[in-house]
Length: 232
Length: 80
Image (cartoon, rainbow over all chains, first blue to last red; front, side, top):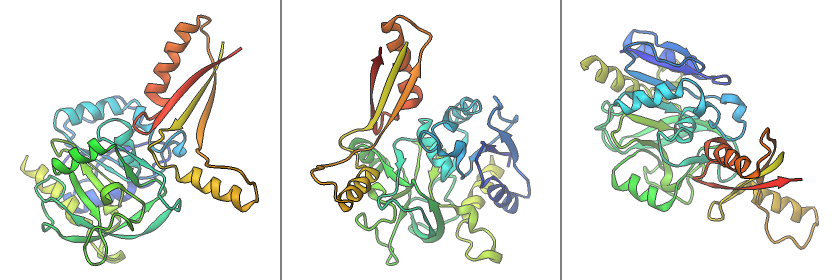
């Protein structure tokens, strides 16, 4: 698997994502500085890591979405290449137009840093093949702006096309749009592009890959990617 | 030429920050405030002296970066 992790000024989860990728594939990803204009030759997977790119100035992810490397990332996505955006990376994907909608301030205005329960809505994607359908997994969230918002038409389209991949659920495994932790529309935690090659999610699967630090519910996401890319 | 660009949340979009400010004003005893919506102001100096061209430049700036038109709308004002 040839993976590239894009590093922006203010990214801070690039090391964790690199560790997760190395753990499942045996290879360290290339770390690519935002001012570059091309991805390393043969890149299969691009990861936009979490953090506070450009100090969240203007809007979260707004300035990173216009960085030099993003034209190459857009071209990679247009060719069907895999692009994973986690937390700030999801915000960047929305700001860059690679995913619809936007992530706004959490409904109750608090920065939320704790474990969340997610339901895996689809397993026929390059990111979720190693999960069981409908599995409820424990993945931490750490964000102030994770409240997914889109117009009614976009939400209808996302639901209709089955592009909601992860949803926040209660301990009973049920969706509760009134009590969802950050106010996200339809309890959305993660969505994919039309061709399912671009995935953005607010929770941090890279935090839960090593039994040394607790649950490993994030590991199957990276294993799914490693499996897909080995077969390619 | 100087211009001011105002970026505000569209009316249908919930503004939790505005709501918090509204509540804070109420608790400070500032009465008679119906509601508060928070926005952003950009004061911009332009090289351009032709107002029509300047407006086109600013519109481009708003669409490309200053506003996220999914949730925000913008207004351009020229300052004399």
